[in-house]
Length: 131
Image (tube, rainbow, N blue to C red; front, side, top):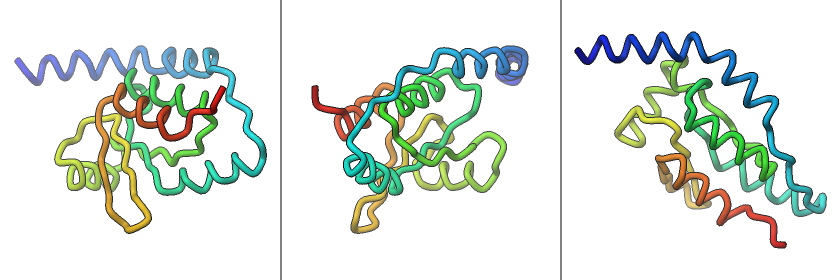
């Protein structure tokens, strides 16, 4: 039964995927504007982040929309079609669940944040523009 359910959702993702990607493109929120020096610092901070994702995952889409709104150039790694990225995700986080944000601190310690709501909360806490 489990393979049948997976096949159903995989087929659904293939059929709806192009529409989801088009909707993502058309519904992108306005990106925040920061002073050039502040944006340069944000760009530098984002080099220590990587988002493991599937292109047509609705939860990944939600995180990418927030990344765009916050003007965050976070590296996106395809864990669906790239076996190396999938292996890194499973080895680091212990699961192949996406979206998953890899955060590397200045000491080289790696933290894995799973769940779209938690990732969005983390990004907002760390990179939100003060009003």
